[in-house]
Image (cartoon, rainbow, N blue to C red):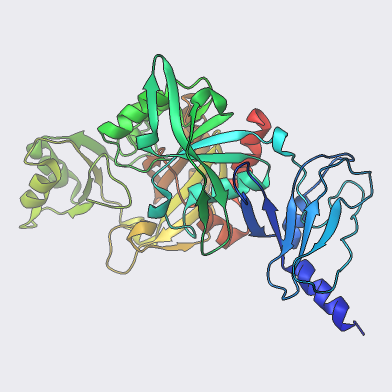
Amino acid sequence: MPTASRRAREAARRSITVVLPTPGLPYNWIATVDAAVRRSLTFPAAVRGFVFIAYSSIPSAQLYHFCGSPVAAGRSPLCRRSRSGGPRWPPFSSGPSGRAPVGVVRWSMASRPLIGVVMDPPSTLHYEKDSTYALMEQGTLLGARFEVITLDGLYGRAGHGRALAHPVAVVEPPAHLRLGEAVERPLSDYACVLMRKDPPFDLDYLCATYCLSLAPCPVINDPGALRDANEKMVTLRFPEWSPETLATAAMARILAFVEEFGAAVIKPPDAMGGRGVFLLRPGDPNLRGLVEEATGHGRHYAVVQRYLPEVVAGDKRVLLWDGEVVGAVNRLPPPGELRANLAAGAWPQATELSARETALCADVGPRLAAEGLRLVGLDLIGEHLTEVNVTSPTGMREVERLTGISPARQIMKRLLAEVG
C-alpha cells in the first residue's frame, strides 16, 4: 500500500507547473503540464538553460531549478531547493531515452526566438477565449519569447519600422498576463511579427500595416495582403464557393438585390463579431430604414449576401495555416438569433467538414496563402463561404476544448520551425 509520502509525491507530480523566465521578469510562462504535454517534451543530452519547475498546489511546495550547466545523458537536470522547509523529495528521474524529466523544457534563453505581437491592449481581451493568448502560450511552451505591441507603440521612422514593446509573462489565473517594462527596439530585432489587432479596419489599422511593411522580418499576415483582403468583401473573389454577394453604397441597388433573392443579410465591411448585421426582407416596413442605417443614407459601402437559412444549423469556423486546415468548430446561434458569432452568444460544438467544404478549403486556402494570408479563418454556412477572417482569426480555444487538438500549437510548431 502506498505510503503517505509516496501519495504526496505522486500528487505533486500530477500538479506540477512549468515556469520559464524572461530577462527582466520573474516568470515567462506558467501552466499545469498534463501527461500528454510531458510526453511531448524532449531535451538533448547536454543542455544549458534556466527552467524553473514548481509544485502549484502542495502545501509543502518544493522549488526545483534547472542548474544552468551541461546535463549528462540519462541524468536529471533538476536540483532540489525547499521553499517551505517541508520534506525534501528527491528530484524526478529521467524517463525513456530522449525524454525530458517531467516538466522540463529543452530551450535555453539564448536560443529562444523573439516574436512581436501587435494586438489590442491585453486588458481588453478574455484569457479563456482569446486565440492570441493561445498562440503565445503554445509558442512559449515551444521555446519562443513574446513582446506585446499596441498601436500606440508601433511607428515608422527613417525607413524603418520600430516599436515600444512590452516583454510578456503569460501566467496562470487570475493574473493571466504580466507585462515587463517597455523596451524600444527596431522590428528587425524580431524573428517574426504576428499582426493580431482586431477590427475595425480603420485608418489607424491601415497606418499600422504601412509601418509593418517596413519590417525586414516575416509579418503574419502580410501587411499588403491585409490591405487587399477585406474580410467581408474578399468572398467576391470566390463566386463559385460563395452565396450571391453585393458590395455597394447605392441603396436602390441593395433594395433590388433583396427583391431578387427574397431575403438578404447586410453587414458593414469593417466590423467584427456580428456587429451591424441585419436581416433584410422584402415587404418589411423597416427595410428602407435598415438600408439607410447600414449605408449612412448611401454614403458608405455595405456588403449584402443572399440569406442562407442553413445558418440555424450553425456557422462553421475553419482555421487554416499555410492553406491547410488545422481545426474547425461549428457555432450555433441562440434561438431566434441571426448571428452565429461566438461574441454574440453562439454556442460552439465539434464538427467535421463535408466533401464540398473540404474541397472549398483545399481551393481557397492555398490561394490565400500564396498572397501572404497564412493564418485565416473561413466562415462557412450551408457549405458556402460567407467571410474570410484575416486580421485576427479566433476559435482556437474552442477547437482545443472540443477536440483536444490545439490549432495554436500546430501553428506555432510550424512557424518556429521556420524562424526558430
